[in-house]
Amino acid sequence: MRLTDFWERMDEALGSAYSRSWASDFHIPALGGQTVDQALAQGEDTQVVWRAVHQTLDLHPKYR
Image 1 (tube, one colour):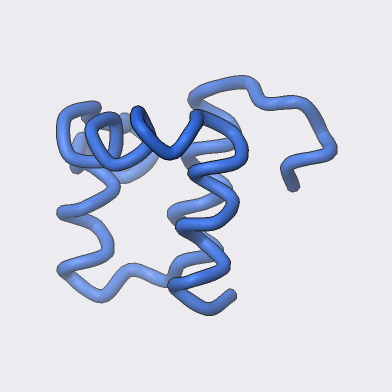
Image 2 (image 1 turned 90 degrees about the horizontal axis):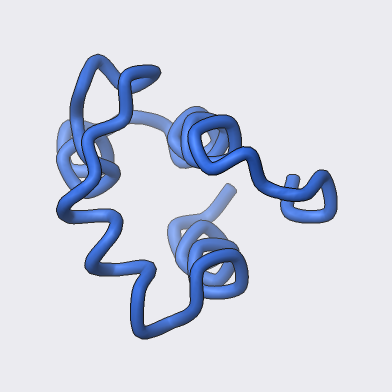
């Protein structure tokens, strides 16, 4: 998944005003306690990060 696609999904799921804030503040256990921003900065695959976000937020299957 391209990074632009990742952020489009984040914006769709959380809203564009909230997605960036959530990505920088919320620590996700499935990412070793890192935030989305930290995981992406360390080179984690966007698909892995998205799956962790999806699971953490218990998003509707349409967001997969």
